[in-house]
Image 1 (cartoon, rainbow, N blue to C red):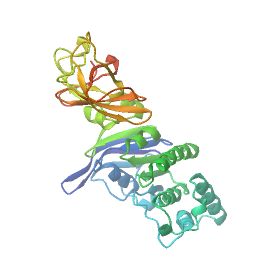
Image 2 (cartoon, rainbow, N blue to C red):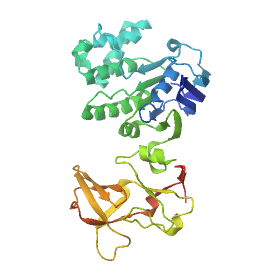
Image 3 (cartoon, helix red, strand yellow):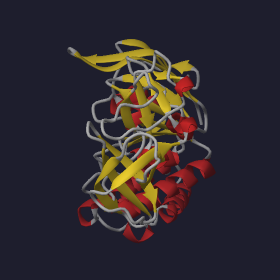
Image 4 (cartoon, one colour):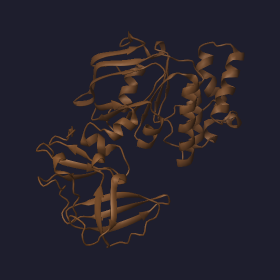
Length: 352
């Protein structure tokens, strides 16, 4: 296994900046995830690691050694592409075996590795089939197996389970995390699915327009986002953001949430409250502030999403179970002040 580092790496395609001045260190044996919306630079970073693209500026290092001018074949990293790239004329077994056959690995070793990986990914019964006779999810697992069967310094995976259905995707990401832990290998994973990123990564990098906005453990980033962009990118439903008022009351039109005045400094331009931290209670005389109105209720089994109309904007609350909340009823809003996030005029996180 090996670590991978970028030192002030930039990559442009004409006037489009795909990666801008990226610097980071991925530790040996780490499960590291790049997360961001489409066109944020995630896949380009993988291609720069693999050697399919060359940086315009900066340096890519594998195991501390610069590899800018080393071909992909000599970098010894395994890649699972988003489009899978299986050989259509080969069976699943032949596709999985191919990297080892090309490296002239002994046949007994090839059989043992293929059997072991096929068992871990539950594809042993599919090995005799051609890719055309496999479902999208089955092809995805064959592509992952082809990468896992090798002994590279790192595994790179570009949205590898996006074609699977929800239940199989959940099972596969658990298996990937377990396999990576057992192998002890460096695994670098790209996804636009926040649930995947949060659940599998030891650390993750948040990207926006080719720039890295924050790096850290998923829970740390979720609890302490560096900016409004990061705060709203992680979390479903996304964080509620309200304008700050000098009175210490986030401006929400007809509904108000009171916060201690000492938390509201002159630099605070926005106040963020995650839906799970927003408390909703039936309105009664004596409540401070003004009521909000229940706009919509979405019961989802174990929890319920409630949309609240405050007059000037709509807020969303995530409540446990299936509370008795009716549309058009008036409610009081509150939250734990320690769970509130504050942002400056440029969207930067503040720590009042």
